[in-house]
Length: 312
Image 1 (cartoon, rainbow, N blue to C red):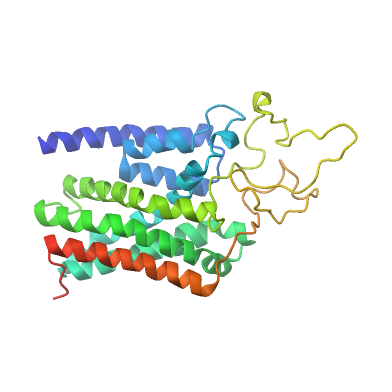
Image 2 (cartoon, rainbow, N blue to C red):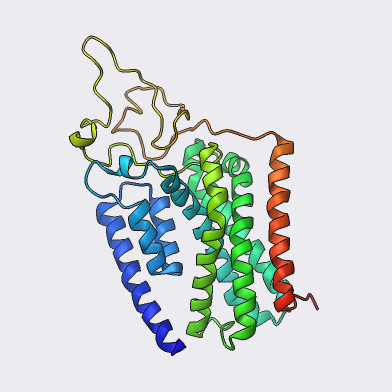
C-alpha cells in the first residue's frame, strides 16, 4: 500500500513539475531566480508546491500579477521559496552522499545542515540576488546572511526530525537509489516549509527580506485594476507624476532608482535594483539568530528521544 501511495505521489509530482516549468516559461513575470526556486520546490514537494505556486505566485491574467501577489502572506511564501529551494537542495545533495561515508547520524545531520547553509546563502541568496546589490557578491552575502540564517534554522527545525525519524523506522529510505529516499526528503521539505513560514512572514513584514517582485515591463496592462500600460498610475491633469516608486507588497520601501532614460520603467535591466531594506541592530540580530538556534536544538533534543543522535 505504501509503495502504491509513493508512485501516486511521484506521478502527481511529475505532472506538477511539468506544469510549473511550462508556466514559468510561458506565463512568468518574475525573475529567473524566483522561477528556478519554484521549480525546485515543486520538484521536492510535488502537488503541495504546485498548490502554493498557483495561490501565491502564478500570474492569473495579463496585468494582474502585481495585485494578485500583493497580500503579505503571498509575499512571505514567495520570499521563503528562495530559502527553501536553496536549503533543501543542499540538504538533499548531502543526504545522497553521506551514506557512502558510513558516519553516525549526528555527523550526517551536521553535514546536511552545513550543505544546506552553503547552498542557501552563497548560491540562492547571495549569488542569485547579487543584482539587487549592484552586482557586488560579497555585499549580497553580508546583506542576506541574517535572513538566511534565521530562515534556514526554522527550515531545518522542521526537516531534521522528519529525516532522522523516518530513516530510522523506514528501512531503505536512507538510500538515494530507493524511491523511499525521495519520498522521505519530500515530506521533510514540506514540513520544513511549514515551520519556516512564520519567520519569513515576519522578515517580509519588517522589510528585512524581499517578497515577490514583478519584473518591470514584463506584465501587461490591466485597466480594471487601475494599471496603465506603463504600470504607473495616471497623474491628475496639470500634475507631474512623482518619480519615487515602491515595490509591490513593500509599502515604505523606497528603491534607489532615479528615473532616467537608463532605468525608466520598461527599459530597466531586470532585477538590478537597490532596495533600501532595513537592518536590525547587531544585538537584536544576534538575539534572533540565537533564538532560532535554540528552537533548532530543542527540535534535535526531542528527536533524540525517539531516535538517538550520536557522533560515534
